[in-house]
Image 1 (cartoon, one colour):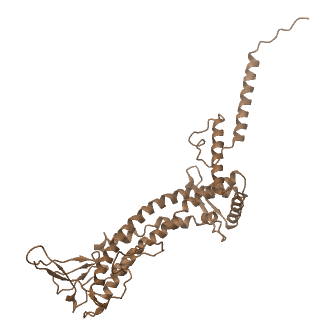
Image 2 (image 1 turned 45 degrees about the vertical axis):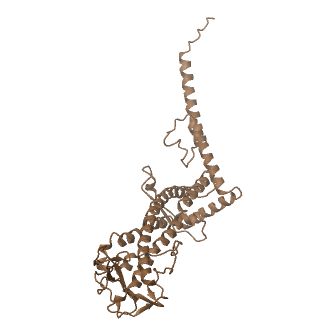
Image 3 (image 1 turned 135 degrees about the vertical axis):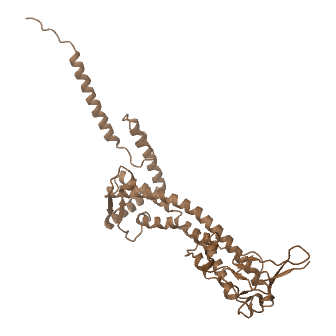
Length: 389
């Protein structure tokens, strides 16, 4: 059985760019972990803020009840948005990380063969010059650094990264490898299973390299701007998927004032403008702006409220308040006022019913009804005959 030889030698500068792309792909996972860890508690912070603000209004623990009510409604709205965004982005992050990790692994494993094949201290498949000067084995390549034996260490630590797969791909050559001489010392042998060797082009480094079918010809790089469109379903797809945090980034800007309050930050919050119409059809299409002094006053009230319940615990306080809300709503529904089952008897509604006012209203209605009954009775009662003197 005879074999065919395929030339696979690469220039150091060319391989370095391919490994830089691999490093960028590996960074997708680290950045995804960073983004998700950063935003994982956002929805809960907003929910806690809403509960505390509602309790402050109901228990008259704030001097800015109108503004606090608006912020509580906004916090409720944004908490729901944050939950939805986080769930969607978590799925997108998983897809981006899996795809990027697969491609990075292909590049790294392909490079591993080139960075270990050699004799003594020299590498046969990596050249420092176009004339085939051999690279030293000790040289490291960021993105392709792998141990000479055993498995590579996975990189999953959270780290903020600015991902640009497209930029790294376009930096790679789109033409033939520039190792022009001495390159035939690095070949890959293969056969067609027949008694005579068959020539065949090969691909490796996640498709970044396509060899010629002759050992005397250098392999071709498939990078560069001209080849970017052809990589749309692989490297291009990862580049797009790596931008998965768009919704969370926008949301973070929208809620930064509320997070300033929720975290009781020392720094002053920015002025807050609320689009009231977004709360529902019954709200007026107006903007409400809450200035920095008022926001700082609300923050001080919030700090005082939480401090007062520190011994009991904020979570226990919120749970007890929610339980009390259920009782209040149920009492209002049991008064016989025929409240709307959909709007006024929901235990999830944050604003309690004004039970005393409802009682007064019912009492007034009953008084009127009693008066009408008495009047009707007096009209139907027979008059006594007067006796003659």
